[in-house]
Length: 477
Image (cartoon, rainbow, N blue to C red):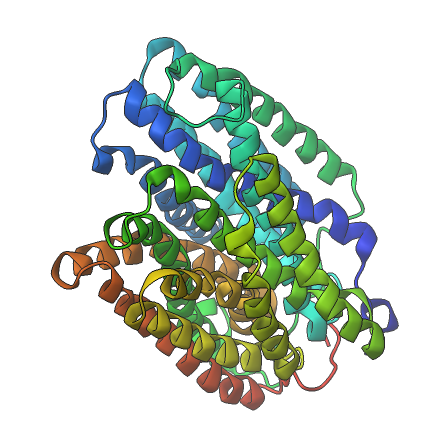
């Protein structure tokens, strides 16, 4: 084990997580844009969902462009440009997308608005391809998934405050899209965002981030694995895992408002805090799962495992207090968080074990949501956010482990599968037309079932390649 790689490199990691914040900030802000565009352009509900479609499909298109360029160059694009330059390029592409909001608003053009969002997400696609494996590489592989979890926690801080700030910038007050709003009001917030993208690109270029990080190689080299990341079974099975994971994460949240409104009789204005609790649950889980990245001291870890989730829960309560929402229905949720803490401790920092435990609890939560009534079902479905929270870093770490020089290519294939968020949501919506919304959550159960299978299968695959997460191995060794 190399001594310099036995601890997280905070001086490099902290600049890196700024991009994770932006992804969350912009993605969650799309939920504010949807009602604004729907009213301003007089769209149907399905037409307004083109906002999400344009955004998520861009990830897939971006990954395809990345791989096409790599094939034409006969060299991996990120390896050629370097990790730092690739991140900066991704941020510049996103900045170009925000500039399109200005002419789009002046012309009142919905297609131009969508093009702007598409280009922003195209930049994010390249950023994600670089930043995810880089977060894993900035320290020992043993805590790689915890670092990615911590970065995800910063991402969820973005999803928590992004909609509030964008809403305030567009409407000028802490209100919703019910009042008259001019489409021109989106110009300035997105221009400011573009300036921020450029500033972060310069900041990262000048930072101490490595251009050629040390990546984990498979100890047992198989000649057939040379050249293509797709020859690694952990990656191929991991691509399906990312597809169904993003699918269950997004579809559980996107179908929750319709379930609460139609089946439980909630007023639309009263649903928002529960949707926000779902995304806050992602932050609660990620802050808990990131504890090991901070310290090797076991007793400190035990304390932080209890402090971190309740600190994140406190932020959620604080935000809702600012919006004058009734907090009384949420205090009981503090007990559900205990289940998360116990499950996190049982996983002992092993990403495969965590994926298995959390997937099984996720199935249980969905089944309770499907077969109970009232608030019990609401809390059960909301808690899926807790148990989805650390799955992205678990899957990502397992899928790229052992890929070595093929890591960035493998990463781009995983980013491509983010489209599962749009497709699985649509599938669940389609199923609900036959089963009703409550029973349509069977789609999510099937997603979690595959994730449990992947967790079981991938451990054996990696062990054959000499990679064991129960042993402390440093990145690249």
